[in-house]
Each structure stands twice: as structure tokens, then as C-alpha cells.
Image (cartoon, rainbow, N blue to C red):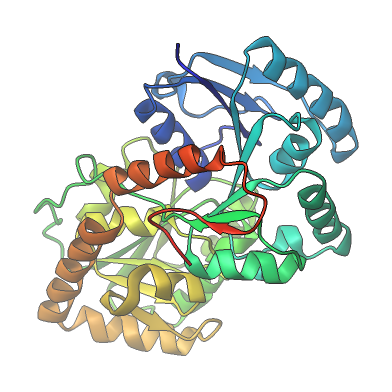
Length: 367
């Protein structure tokens, strides 16, 4: 008889953590898979394949204890063996609601010290106390994020591993479909929220007027109106493209992929661009450097002049663009495929059932 995994996440809006979860669940055919969300948003439609979908309808953080009670009922109803939580509030609810005899696995998707979500002292306290209350197997999407997590909340690890986010190279395949256009076409992908720092890109493009350079931004979010207002007022060669379901068909048409995030965990949109053989110009944050190593070019964060200088350097060096794109593609195939991720995740699920109580660095992804 199949064991049952219950996956809990804040919602199913189309972001990196949510996309990863939906893809992983399709691969876990040896388990029954139940998905639980805190709120009802779902941008995946028929792409979502699971054996049950529930919403706990948690509208405010004060309802976390009630959501935990509801979660415990679902665990009992479906005889769940493993609960896998993603993102802050879903993890809090899981730690409160998962019985002691049920394994809890938690994925940390960000470098928590720089994450806006963890800045308030009470959020850090909630993370620490609930971890001590229900020790879970921690998976971080990068080695740096794993080290930082335990240092930041000041606890000793129980069981922990880093397991890189992935891209499916069968979906994101490099093609020769660049537009034959004199304009140097730049693209970025990410939700329109503070973390992604799109305002920086708009400021940088104020200094690129007359340089025959354009920027398209794919994504949606709360900053859409303010970004559009800035684009209109400054008459920038920038277009907000909204959210699309066929991003793998769009990104490869551009000349350069950029990202200006102030922090990330392990950016899925960057991995997708790498798989498409796109050259990358990225902010010089720790996670991007672990993810891309020397295959990308980095600019000094919050320095529009440095961004513009390096963009123009790439614009006028076709061979460099080509070699960077090839290096990105090779790095993805070596380190960040779906097959590699699933192999590691299955190892972690198997090892998480161990009764050992001392710190354990799980197989295949040792510290």
C-alpha cells in the first residue's frame, strides 16, 4: 500500500516554491499526494495533479492555531506518513499541527537573514520556538541558506540537508529563436514585489535612453501600478508583460536575462534562463553566486551605473554572450536537473524516518 505525503504551502500562486512543489508531486507516483494550502489562490489549473486538494482558509496569522487543528484532522483522515511544509506560515501551522509520530520535512526557500519575512523579531521567535517544539527535517535550497538558517534562529540542527532547486531541461530547451531585431532585448522574470527590486531596473534604464536597449518584465504583483506609473512618467523603453504560462517559449527570444533581487533562495527563473542558454547579468547577492558561479556577470547591487556599464559591455560583445550562455546551460545539466533533485528528495524522505536524535546530515547532500 502506498504511503501518503501531505504537502502544505501558503497558496498556489505561480512562484518558485509553488512551481517546484507542483512539479515534484507529479514525480512522486509511489506515494499518495495530498496538497493543503492556507489560502485558495491557484494559478496552475490542470497542471496540478494530486490525490486531494484542501484549503485551510487561514485569513490572518491569528488563525494559525485553528489551521493547525484542521491540518491535524486531515493528517488523521488520510493516514499521512510524511508532511512536507513550504514557506513561513505553512511551516508554523505544520509544526503546531503535525502529531509527534508523523515525520515533518520543511523546505527553506530563502536566505533568511536577508528575507523581509524574517526581519520582525516575533517572526524569528516563532520560527525558533516552533522548531524546538516540533523538530523537522530541514531542506534548504542552497548550502549557504542551510548554514544561515541554523545560525540565524540559533538552534542546533536535528536533521538537515541542502537540496538544490531544479529545472526540467526537457521543458526549458535551448532553441535558436532570437528575434532578428537591431534593439538589444533584455528580459527579467519575477513577481512584482519589493524583493525583486524592479524599481532599480527602471532607475537603471533611465540612464540607458538612446542606447537601443529594451526591457520586458514578466510577472504580476502588488507593485504593478507604481512600476507602470514610473515607466510612463520617465518614458522608459520598458514593458510590463504580465504573467504567462508559456514562459519557456518567451525568454529564449531575448539577448540577455537580468535579475535585480535584493535576496533570493535559489531563483527558479534564473535556472530556467540558464537551461535556455541565456547569458545572465545579476545582482551580486550570495545566492546568485552559489547558483551561477562564474557563468554569469554580476553588478554591484544598488549601483545603476555599474549595471548599465556591464549591460553595454555585453551588448557589444556577441562572442562573450554566446560563451556565457553555453556555460550556463552546461552548469544546469551538471548540477540542477529534475532527476538529480528527485533522487535527493527520495533519499531525504527515506532517511527522515530514522529514529536518531542527534544532528544528521542526510545522504548525498552532506554538509
